[in-house]
Length: 150
Image: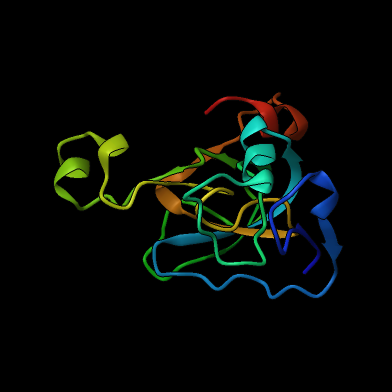
């Protein structure tokens, strides 16, 4: 797939366009989305630059905010259909630790952000847990959906 990635931290000049990055594989609770728009979030710039203590597997694909359409569903996913326009909450949580079960997802044992801790949306495809998907409402453009807070 096509992607914008970096192989080392630095200025935005370290970003590289590639056309042969592997399409991400689906976990049972995830959805594969074809990215239509990806919005530049300030966090994306911070991730590219890096900071002390940020240890990412490289190469890394940034991108927290996006819109696109559903391509494939993990085996445990229902309620979404191929072609459906979506965006997502980029904050990732496990859904089964003590904190998640108490409704305190921001304290999750595995809390992460799309594009920061896991590969993000500056690519042709992105995988996201189904619980994070948000349907794009009728009358709302895909461009707006990529930049809308979820």
